[in-house]
Image 1 (tube, rainbow, N blue to C red):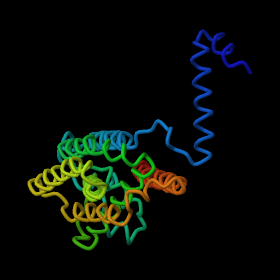
Image 2: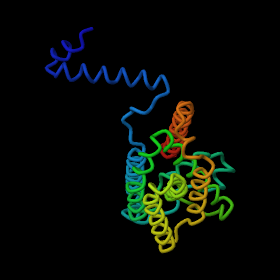
Image 3: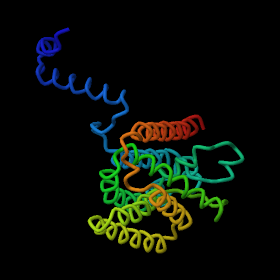
Image 4: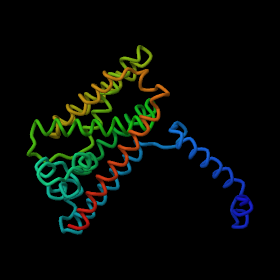
Length: 266
């Protein structure tokens, strides 16, 4: 099939579409070979947009349920739990495993959401640029889990929401990682230390989940400590990291889908 003539006949720029299709074919072959380096993907932005979309849907749900605009600034606990808030009794006793991930995409009001997304917008690009999308998603997902596990041992009966545990995971990893890289990266290490202090103080002021913050930061720091910088980027391990990233993406989407199914079916 002559792609150029086909799109020209539709009144479109056939040459441009021909180049696009050639580019997609090349990327598909690279993906099949386990090479994600050329994939134009920004995981931190996708996570940011997911948080915004889910918060908007939660607020709309609150409005339709008669809660009013309280769901915008201070959503009631039942609404937060309906939209994936972590509550360990429900997770352990009722098989609602998805809460261990969905809580990191649920926020307790516009200020909570705004602060966390500001941190993600500032910190996320630096970490993703260094690690690449696959490794970044593995780190984000793993530290979201270590954050909520810390909450299980600290106060398992308290509902928890927010991306801050995973964000502290990114920061904890970066502090250790950039320190180990050496003097050229120490400025980035110091930048992450400043964000850690800022986020910790903000957490104290608003009564945030500091157990989750600690769990996320500790998980990220441990990953940064156990994985030497060079081992992260060995070509022989690229396919493994990319596979792990795809697994994290699949599990996260399955968790969010399970949450939405429960919301819709009541």
